[in-house]
Length: 491
Image (tube, helix red, strand yellow):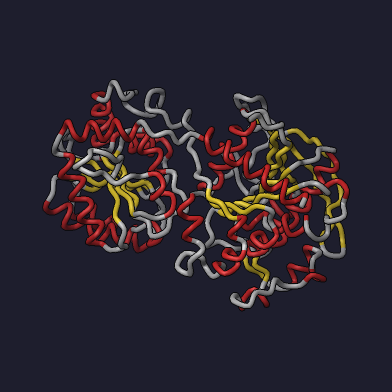
């Protein structure tokens, strides 16, 4: 059944290629393009941070300064526009510009972050009126835009411009909720409505929890994988908001993120030593040897190379990696390459492992996009033993490159990696459940034992590369959620 095209406004604090601190930017950079390809009129709104060069991105002013209500005064904003090319045509990106709020070195972690993102959200809603472009649905991402569903049900409730506008709210990581004091309600103009009261969440009665307000007011709520959507209904993963999420579980969905299959494609990747497909897997060995050489490791076709591209943090399982690493490196023919930054104690531990096993461990404690591609292509295995992983993109990229993921069964990792079963030959990776170093270690040994059998491993690689994690399917599911949100709004 064909669906009539929708006017979709996507609001986010970040988006590639303009500003990125994490996976949120990748999602907002890819999903709108996939929606555009389906025939929808899609537009993105984000702040114009100081690091976004107007000349480089050919920004043009499309709305001159206009007043934005903030507390008992107005503050001027203007809108600059960039365009992103996509298969469905140019995608407009509206950037809210205000030097006082956004002309800074960074994106987050300022004392006035609440003011900055309230201003951004209010400027977007008022700016759409200036542009006379009326969205059917506003798709809000994470706490920075969570005031919007709140406003659509309060101060914009009787505004004819937004009378029929629905709101979908996406949780990328429930741990980052945007918690502030009462003064924020006054700045946002919703102080007359007070705090959100919930008998099972006492803290909501005396703080402004932006994430909580987004969950409470949105027409539809979703998160970035089906398993994570189930997990956050429990105290273990709910970050204190599980009672509220349980109240709204009839409007809570999980939609798996996709990956950019043009950017991550071993057949066309210009970063890697040799381009390859599932029919030319022998060229993957060329990528492996080149990676070993660049990383300063012993060049050995038979040695299993395990890649890690991650933030170095306990949440990502680095406490498990550090416990399992020494016996693994001491007793097995294996090499470990780690790329990323994070907690200093994990930096120190990785550097220590490199010093003790210089021909087996390479640590690059920064982020390097080109090297990341080389690790995806040149590794035999890809390690993600996360304690919490709402979706995860690394394991999906690894699958596309025929690099076998080793993961803990949580969130999106559980939804994308199927544990290899020797009896049936089915699966596309290796997984474990208990968050324990021994569980990780025994899973690594299973993978290394399977790696010894060339024909079996080759079949496993082919199964991994056959997975479809493009944005097309996810975008179709989001279109369905937009329709549900519109229906809910009308009711």
